[in-house]
Image (cartoon, rainbow, N blue to C red; front, side, top):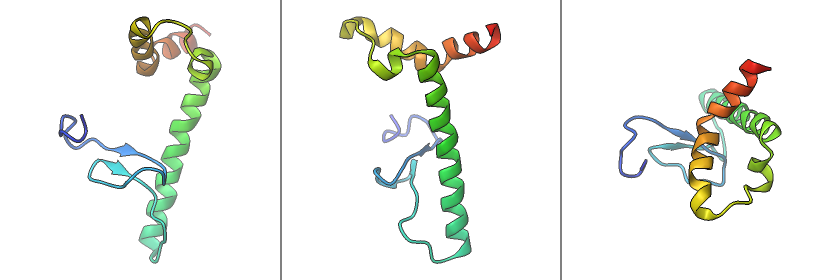
Length: 95
């Protein structure tokens, strides 16, 4: 959907394993200016926040770490609910 332009100016943040393109921001291999260093530091910081969030979700919902154990047909709605984070927000609010 990103390649088709369906998300407008939205971007994804990825690690060095992804190709950098118009919708995917990845760290620079070599930095030669202060601006490039700042970009890399900022990119890494935001990626760490996202990865920590996934870690919290996996702690609340082990199925994200070990698998769902349901048929492929039944897994799609479960995956959508998890990644929208509705269940996470409900759990946090209810303590």
